[in-house]
Length: 105
View 1 (spheres, rainbow, N blue to C red):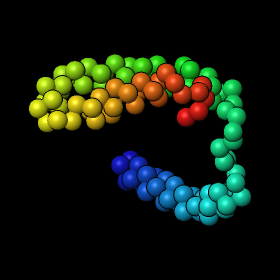
View 2 (view 1 turned 30 degrees about the vertical axis):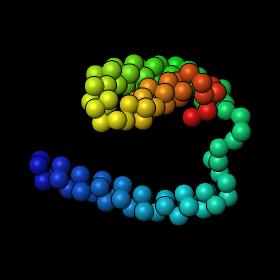
View 3 (view 1 turned 180 degrees about the vertical axis):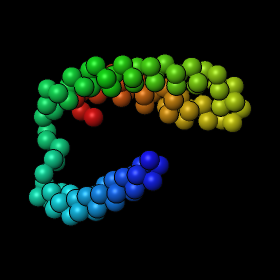
View 4 (view 1 turned 180 degrees about the horizontal axis):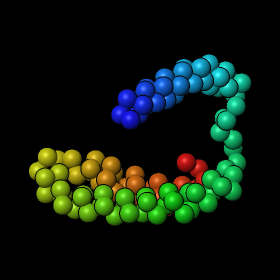
């Protein structure tokens, strides 16, 4: 039974690697023809995914990075890079969460 499982796993691995290798030229040619290129207008699905998946995650991320900034503030002040750490840990996640257009990922 164990021999059959090992053979089946090896055959499956060979098939997956072969299909992956064969699909690379298709991916390259699709890129050269502009297939799946970002359009100017986001679709409704992109807007919904942004509103219900990305924005709540980024809101939590903004809170976590703000707390991290507050905890590390004494060390940033000693190092003289308080402005840089505030920009990186607070301003950038907040801007990505609240000021970016809906659906623009």
